[in-house]
Image 1: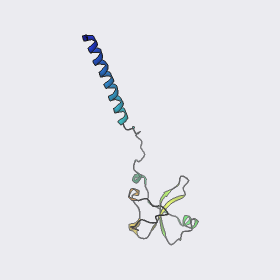
Image 2: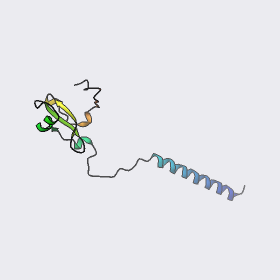
Image 3: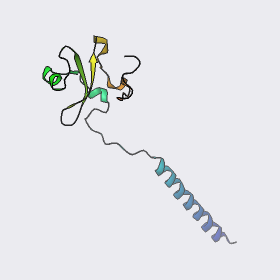
Image 4: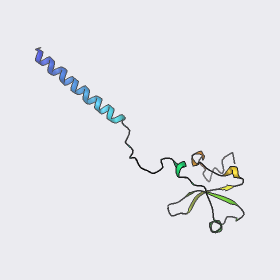
Amino acid sequence: MSKKNIIIIISGGLLVLAFLLFIILKQNQQPVQPITNQPTNKADEFQIEFLEPKEQARLNISPDLKIQVISRTADGQVQTYKIIKNEADIITDPTTLGTISPQQGLPASE
């Protein structure tokens, strides 16, 4: 083989190697998140809120109970709430909540 053919083969091999490396690196890249002024953590936007007596009456909840609103739907309806028996029950950080389904009932700590 001539020197020219060897240079062409090596150059072609390097191009293929560079192309494969580019594809591998592109697949491992994480999508770039846009920078916004909105809180990125649910705990940053969480505010302690309690049900108003009108809401308790509408939901057929005894007015003697202290009820903390955990989440609301987009139209402002109560989605999740918690009965507060003492001050230690108040949720201040929603990231500490576990998942509760109606079939499960309350977590064992309750």
